[in-house]
Length: 461
Ligand code: GLU
Image (cartoon, rainbow, N blue to C red; front, top):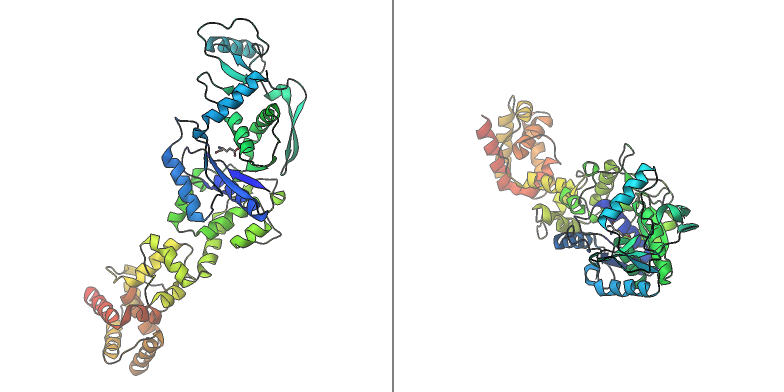
């Protein structure tokens, strides 16, 4: 069974790069009928926070990505790590290193003076003397001194790391006993049964170290997929300014979970030239062997395009639910369908859609100067008054009823349709633009229409 994981360090919010690898891991597990596990890498007490953990979980909830089973918290696993440290020490695969800070600095300076790479020289690797007094040792793992370490990567192919270049018996436990990052990642991945690791290629340099741990403990090495980074349009690593922000900021901006997931799945993965994937399709089609070898480019227009696609194709009932976080509650509104049918083609985001709804439902408090000049000229107010009279003596219900009354005024006053359309629009909305006015009138009803017309005339006469 395929078991994948997402292992965020809760140092801040979940950003979209992280979410993308989480999505890939999730999809691959689902594709294989496997499991997707979540592990919170919260061992760095100075940088991690409970708030950040909650923010990550909230983002997952918003997107409907649910992890299988219990969440693993590294902060609760000290005993497990201690057991493996002891095992490695007992087996002679790790050792205590008593090198002091001063000695380390001295070594570094000598190496620098000789223009050598600065690295630990292994002086305690085979030490069997009396340890110096007053030094709390760190624990180092014995890593191979020669040969190569091969990372078999499902995206990049096999990558060879020269043992002597990278592995200076790295520390697996600090002087205070705290285990180090690469050590605990390897142990947890093994104990959690993770057999396919999908993560950003910024972690590639950690992988040989983790392989050393796997080998020392006799663990089976998982399959690795290191996913190339997301770049901005200038080919640079995506920064906050480009959109590498908190996943929840996308909710605030009015993106639907579906659009965001669809957008992310295409950042670095493709299936022919298909752009639109339902969630079920993503699960069915995703395979990490199709992850692109080069960096992907973040493109906001594409995200907007997908978002408007999903808004247009979402049922009005569901849209009404999705709009509630933006202060628009149409969930039990009789006018929901006519309103959303008229507006959903016009909005790129839920936030914009909410604004459009509010614009229609709110009596204007001001009128745009440009619109006034264009619409409230010649006999515009006579036309509006004429329309009000028609409304008062009729009981229009549907947009077609409102439209028919406009036609009557046009023909009785022998004017073009624009002579009523434009002033009426500005009277209703305070500006040009927006959906059909007969639809607006059906939504707000006769009394509100009359009120808006008389207010427009009073305030602009
Ligand atoms: N905790 C690491 C991070 O947040 C990920 C570790 C991994 O995926 O192996 O970048």
